[in-house]
Image (tube, rainbow, N blue to C red):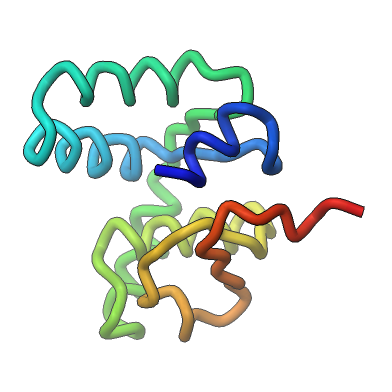
Length: 118
């Protein structure tokens, strides 16, 4: 949650949240913490100035299938994230999920440290 807070406060570069990630995140927060925290997370991600919610196109779903088959450590949602990143030429990803570590072209960052500040 520290990464979400840091992005939300502008301490890290703006974050892109795909519809797949939004659904997975909200379901997990609702299951573990309840409906009120899930609603708060939805508001933070959808309305936050430093988050861009993006609907991943069908092409990412299709490319994600191939990545899901290629990388045994990726969940299907993670495979669609990797497909989105490849299509958009995005290298960096904030994630605690080490399944991304073996994906070509993806550099995973797992702390709220700003590696991009000069």
